[in-house]
Length: 536
Image (cartoon, rainbow, N blue to C red):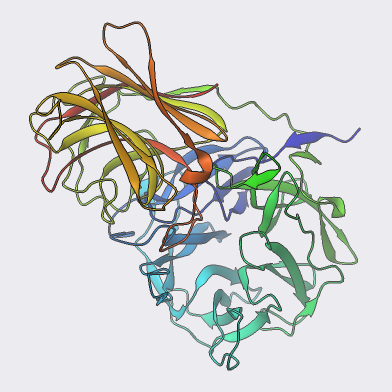
C-alpha cells in the first residue's frame, strides 16, 4: 500500500509557493499581497511539516505599502539558491484594478541574504527594468541570469477579448537589475493568461512551467521544454495541462507549480489549491483562501508527470515521512518584548502602535485615526485562519473616555468585508455616553456593513470570541463576573469572502485585534490578554 499524506501541507492563506533545498533543509515562500511583513519563509526537513521561520520583507525600506487595493501588493515570489546566496524575487502592485482598471504594471525586484535564518539580513530591493508580475530568476550553466515575467503582449490584436498576458524572458545583469536583451515572448496561452513561470534545467533539457487560465476555476499547469536555452525555441509537452481539477472536486483552482529535487533524488512540486465548501449543492469559496499543496513528480521520456497523472485530492500518495497533526491551540506569548511570528498588519505601519512591555502580559494597542474600512494602515494585528473549525478569542480591558474611541476583535477578509465586535462609547440613543459593545457585520451589498450596539457595564474586562465552522462565523462575548457567554450574530462565510469592488480576492480570512479613533488617535490604551486560536 502506497504511503499517503494529507494536503494541503501549509493550510490557510498561503498561495503561489516556491521552494529551494539547501542540503537536507527545504525553504518555502508564499505571497502576502497587501499585508506586512511580506514573504513568509517556512522551513522543513521532510516536506510535510513546515514551520514559519521569518520573512523576507520586514522593513519599510524594502516594502512600503500605503493605499494599495485588496490583493495588490506583493505577488507570487520565487525563491532560488545560487552559490551560497538565497534570492527572493517578486513584485509590488501599487495600483491593481482601481475603479477604471487602469492598473500599473510593476517593475519587480529581488532581495538576497547569505543567512536565511536571520530576518534582518535580507538586502534592500534591487529593481528590474522589465515590467510585469510573477518574476522568476534562472541561472544557466554559463552563469548568465534570465528573468521571466508576465505582462501584456505589447502588440495586442485589435478587438481582442483576451487579456493576452504572456511570459516574457530577458537576460539581465543581476547586480544592477538592468535588462541586457529585449524581452522575448516565450509563451502566449490560448486561454489568454500565461503566468507563474518557473524555468529549471534537468539533464539536457530546460523546462518552462506556466500557470494558465487564471487563478480561479480555469486554473491549470502547463509544461514546455527546450534543448537550446531560456530564450527557446520551446516545445509543448505531450500532455497539457498536466492535470486539471474541475469545479466539482474537493480541491479546485490548482496550479502555479514550482518543481524541485529532494535530497534523495526524487522530484516534487508545490502549488496552490483551494478547498471550497459544499453547502446545499453549491460550492462556496473557501474562507481559508488558496493554500500550499505538494505532489510527487516522476519523469517519463524526459517529461514530468505530476501525482501519477491523477487529479489532486486531499489524501495524496507518495511520501513516507510521518506527517504531524497541527497543534490544536495557539496561545499568544505576551511575555516577549516583540511580536511572535505570524502576526500581520494591513499595509506597512507608519509607526509602531503596539507594546508588550507597558503592561506585562498584555498586548497594548494605541489606536490610530484610521478605521478598519480605511485604505491606509489601521491599528490592526491579524493572524491567518488555518482550519475551517477555528475559534479566536481575547480578553479586552478598554475604558474609552469618549465617543469615537473603539477597540475589539475582527474576522477579516478585506477593508470592504469583515465582521467585528468592539468596545466603545455610544454617541446617540438610549445608551449615549455609556460604554457599549458595537457589532459590525457584512450585508448583501459589498462594502456596506450593519452596526448594532449592546449594553455593557461601565467598567471591567470583557472576553470577545469569533468562531468559524467553514460556512459561518459566530461572534460572542462574556462580561467579567458573569457566567454565561452571549452570542450576538452569525455571519455567513459567503458574505465575507466576496470579491471587492476594486482590487482582487486572492487572500484568505484572518482573525485580529484592533483599535481606532474617529478621525483622531485614541489616547486610551486597549489591553488584550489571553489571546488564543483554537481548532474546535
